[in-house]
Image 1: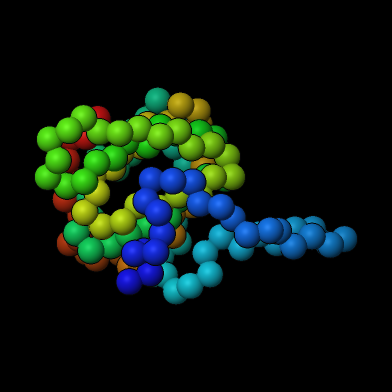
Image 2: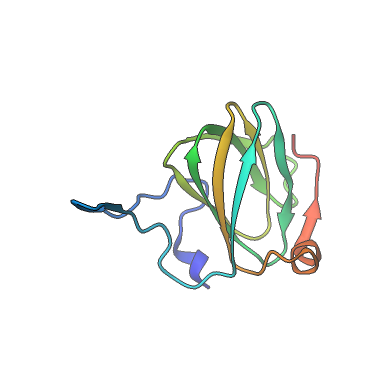
Length: 131
């Protein structure tokens, strides 16, 4: 399981970019994954408020910022919160409740373990009221 070696809820350090006269190449994820989704979110909107039973995902912020709330499934504790900004990459493993509150208009990419077809996504998802 690829995600076992990734520190959860922390910004992931990206490898050094490759630059030449044509521009820049930045490697974000360098292993197999099942979906890549571009999402645009308006300021003060909330997304997620769920957890995944088996799936995991990375989020890479192209532009904007958000507050990321999270806690382990079954916890009665208040959710923890971290802020992420443009060019940040972070990870959500299975069995962690999570919610995103967008403090600015934000564009981000989600890179997930599995297909993002409605059936596959919904079968693995459990909705919660984290925030």
